[in-house]
Structure formats: structure tokens, C-alpha cells
Amino acid sequence: MTVNDQGRFQAIISHAKEYGFVFPSSEIYDGLSAVYDYGPWGSELKKNIRESWWNAMTRMHDNIVGIDAAIFMHPTTWKASGHVDNFSDPMIDNKDSKKRYRVDHLIEGAAEELSKLDKHREAEDLLRQMDEFLAANDFVGLKNLIDQYGIKCAVSGTCNWTEVRQFNLMFSTQLGSVAEDANEIYLRPETAQGIFVNFLNVQKTARMKIPFGIAQVGKAFRNEIVARQFIFRMREFEQMEMQYFIRPGSQKEWYAYWKEERMKWHTALGIPADRYRFHDHVKLAHYADAAVDIEYAFPIGWKEVEGIHSRTDFDLKNHQHFSGKKLQYFDPEINQSYVPYVIETSIGLDRMFLLVLCHAYQEEKWAKEDGSEDSRVVLKIPPAIAPIKLAVLPLLKKEGLPEIAREIMASCRNEFYCFYEEKDTIGKRYRRMDALGTPFCVTVDHQTKEDRTVTIRYRDTMKQERIPMDGLAAFIRSKF
Ligand code: ATP
Image (cartoon, rainbow, N blue to C red; front, side, top):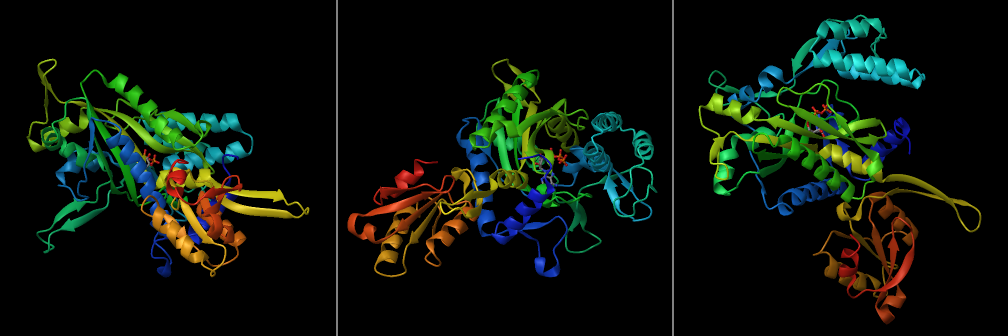
């Protein structure tokens, strides 16, 4: 599998639509840019990833609890968090095509083109200079870099650029019924602030002692300018974030702990470690004293899927300042009150979903015994998060076989998601289940009537074996 394989990426997007995973939003009206809907199997897969994360955080850690905060928050929240003033990206417009680009994406695109021409050193040099200018907020330097490398607009093909400017990424709307009285509020651009403003509520009511964490999953909204690459960058998306409150001075230790802990979660899902890497930030966000991305080798290149940030006491201190309320913790072990420091882990659920699809999607070909070629498209989704765990397939629609298949459905559907299918040949049904990523199929045939055994067929190896139908649910469970 190569990194940077547009053909493969397009095939995954088509597969996701054809098999009911992801649809463009309001498609009958030609869709809405960078907004997507999840179909029957997509919503199931997304739920399973969400649950895996939630359980890893809350169930597996005695000192992490969850919340579910509202999307709307008091507008001062975003002043305190720095989003009103800082949540913007340097952008540049092409005067001929009127197309707007995020400067880092424009330059990264140019570096990729250089790499394709085997000019690797030049590409690295370009990216290094970009990182330096971004870190220094040097917009003139960035503009000069674009001019110096002759970077062109993909639409107009010209280098006729405006100056580099900042654009805020938050969506705003009005709260209140009468326009004149209405307050401008924002759709949250991250879920983290819902955790910060509830820090004391949670600490007190759940009787938490530092160190402790608060986890949350929910929608976030960003008016991304360069919104392409399918669900990789959306305008409405879901985040899974956890803020870990710690004693000031212990941030290095906890930062290292969470880096390792999060990587363990990724690999425990069954995704190979060599598809992941850490990427340290050169340009730190306004709130961070250290930050690292967990990157995955997507078919469109190495890209961020999760961020781990050492956020210091930036957020709580600012909320304390803007709200006038104390947000401190009394630490009985050292007999001191302080504003806790925070390590954050932040992962995009949709991006993780895309990662799973990219890992799972395989086109396989092999020679049959008669010498002809056979092929299939299979989603090798880790069984624990597969949308359908078990397909129950009666060989025929008659002769008592559907009744036995229904009996199997009844004994398993309480345990995990099962799917009943009696249409088409068994071969076609297997192929369809491969395409949906169903790890196990059982076929009910005439022998089942005699000895209550079924044929189980394994998705990844396509191997089949005969097993008793009684105790099937426990057997399947033991496999994930
Ligand atoms: P990027 O550099 O890709 O814009 P970011 O560094 O701004 O991401 P964070 O603010 O750290 O991202 O958000 C944490 C996570 O949320 C990211 O790692 C990513 O998985 C997810 N995420 C952020 N923006 C989007 C988006 N527009 N669409 C989908 N997921 C997103």
C-alpha cells in the first residue's frame, strides 16, 4: 500500500457511498460543500468507534468521567478561550479565479508537486521555511515564499495573489427572537470549552481528585476554507476530547503518558503501528506549551488524526478572569490551592472513521482452481468495531431453513448487530458482506436440520468450517 494514492482514495469514497456508509449532505440538491451524512452502516461504524473511545476513557480509567455539554455556549466563552481573536488561519486569494486558499495548504500542495518531480530537497526546504514563517506569524515572509517559488492557483493558473490575511473560522448565529435584541453566538469550534466551563461542577459533584479527566464527544463546527478530501476536513464534524487536570509542574510526565496511552488505543483496534507516527508541532497554538499530532498514512499522505496538547492553565485562568469566578482546586496532599494544568487529547471521530475505512479497504484478486481469476472488494474492519458482526444466511428460502436462521438471529441479536439475508446465491451474499466489512457469516443448510451445525465463513481468510449452532453467540464474541 503506497502513501499518496489518489486512485485508491477515490475508490474508497465511491465504496463508502455505494454501500451506505457516507453520503454527501442533501445530495438531491447537489450536496453541501464539506458536509456529509452517515448511512446505515456508516452510522453503525461511527457509533462503534465512538463507544470504543468512550469506554477506553471512562470505563478503563477510574479517574475519568464524561459530560455532554450544549453546542451553544455563552459568547464570552470564545473571548476567554482566544477563539474570537486567534482562531483564524492565514489565507490568500487569487485575484483572477477569486479562489481562497489556506496558505499552509497552498504551500504544502506546492511542496508535494516538487516531491513528485523528485525535487525532495527543495520540497523540504520550502516546508521548513513555511513552518518558520508560520511560527513567527510572518505574513510578509509567507507571501514572499509563495512569490519566490512561483506557486500558482490551480484554477486560474496564475500567480496573481492578494496579501496574506487572517480569517476567523467560527460560524456565528443569533440567539433570541427579535433581531435587534438578539445576541451573536457561535457554534462551538471545539468541544473542549464545554469541559473547561464545567470544571468545578464536575470536580465537586463527581468528587474528583487531581489528577482527573473529563471526556466528551460532540459536534464541532468550523468554516474551513479549504474543505476538500471527503470527510477528512468537514465544516460540521464530531470530536472526542478529554481534558486531564493535573498539578502544575507535572505536565511533562502526563504529556508523555497520554502520548503513549493514545497510541495504545489506536494499535489495540488492530491497526498496525507502522501506519502511525508522531509529529511534533513547530508552531504552537496560542494555548499550548507542547503539542504533538498522531498521524496516519492515509492514501492522501501522512495526515493528522489526533492531537495531544499540553494546554497549561491557559483556559481555566482565562475563564476565571472573564467570568470573575474562581476556578481553583484545593490539593489536600500539598495543602495548596491552584489553577490546574491540562493535558488534552483530541481526536476527530469522522477522521478516525476515514482512517478505519482506509485501513480496511482491500481489492483482492486470486486464481481459481480452474485457472480463471476471481476478485472481491473487502473491508477488513477490525471485528470489534465492524457495523455488522454476523450475517445469518439460509441456503434456501424454504424447507425450514429460514426458520432455523431466524432462531440463530434471535439467539445472537441481543449480543451484537446481526444481519439476515436470504436473497441471491450464497456467493453473492458473501461478496456483499465482504463489502460491508462483516467479519463472520453463517450458512444454514440441510445438514443443520440434522445435526444443528452451521458453516461459518471468515471474511479475511474466506476459510469455512463447520461448527455447532448452539453457543454461536459466545463463539463469535470470543473472536473480538
Ligand atoms: P487541522 O490541522 O487538520 O486543521 P487542527 O490541528 O486544527 O486540525 P484540532 O483543533 O487539534 O485540529 O482538532 C482536533 C482533531 O479534530 C483533529 O486532530 C482532527 O481529527 C479533528 N478535526 C479538526 N478539524 C476538523 C475538520 N474540519 N473536519 C474533521 N475533523 C477535524
